[in-house]
Length: 417
Image (cartoon, rainbow, N blue to C red; front, side):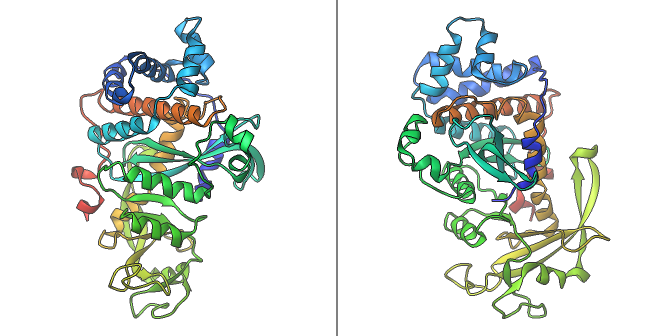
């Protein structure tokens, strides 16, 4: 899985101060009453609310020790440690409730997959390995995870997570036992973790929306096959070297078994068209990109078995700018009837998620878990995701007018098309 553009912002973390507005209280209470309905005990539900509130209020790193210090209770640190690391409550129903709550309040237009890199000073926290990070040109001890975000052009919020575990963690019995890694957790690539996170989220019977992810470092054919089998619509970023077959008989690659995607797209340079998008990072300025699209298929895999009865069961989208090398980005999608301008907007949701990760998720401590257990990590990131939702939903409703995830008019990608 790629996502390498996000690594510098992840690795070079900056400390934030967080101002918790009182207007968020109503959202916090409402969300937590829904979120923790699956927790069997009253004290667990109370601790869950306290923990989410503390993630919003405590300055600096959101460790259990810092959270307990805010509560001014001598037993708070031990109780919170047990609640996060040793308790039996299942985080999956909490995440399902969070996803439904977020979607109900501000329906999104896509599910965006984003990698998360968590630098670690030591090597004992679950999943930590020394890994080479290409964008910074060096190896560091890090945890790696992938998150699934409900995303729209104005807001995004994480709803599901998957921690990537290497062979060194899964095949070392004592190490695995100390980290409380469940028996059903199996070895997978980082790209495989991304796919599994999407498929798990799809099983929650949420509204059907496309998955947007960067697949440049993934096995694209496996990704497409898994998404198609799960009936998940998708828009994936690819490398230009990926061999494709153009469905248009006037284009190079038609009826051939192998032609790089960038060469197919280069042939479309003359028919590029401008597509508009709103730059939220620069005062909602209206900007444009050049886009072009063509129906394509996978060489040797076109037909009823893999990509539908008709040739060209996928759409190749090129994105670039005037005066620059063409194409700058290549995306592959099964949303073959969606207009390129809408696909451009979907592709840019990755920027929305990157921005909200830095401005909100990191501030509420999404990477601050200092424990060593698998279950503790998952419970912490679940509650930090809830804090993120409180921040974005409380803020979006403070002025009495919701800032919706959806496209103009509230339509999703398929409806817009």
